[in-house]
Image 1 (cartoon, helix red, strand yellow):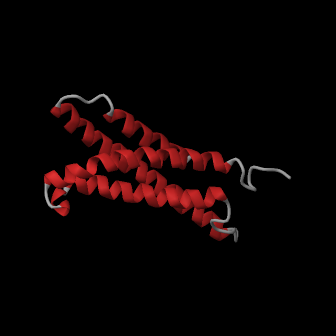
Image 2: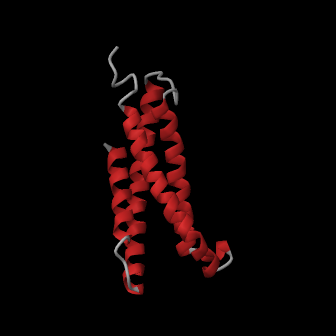
Length: 135
């Protein structure tokens, strides 16, 4: 459930920015986008910790299915995306200034779409794990 909530929060954070037109709308939208994504990242991290704890506690194999491998890649990309988004907006000096940070925006936006799709593919891959498939 935590992973589903994290994916939903991320999707809402992306959709929130779609109708912005004016500078104040964009600024306000960006702050809400960041807050929703921070909540999403915390939710996803909690899910990852619970999953790994459960695997370790029960001697389960790690990252052996397509779902597990895609999930790990998706988690890593979510965390990288969050770091880039936060630093790009709130610490543009790390990119050599505001103008350079703004150049990263289109890549941040497109990769966000790709990561959400990867999250959805990971959810679909879960239906084919040993936990869900009876032989």
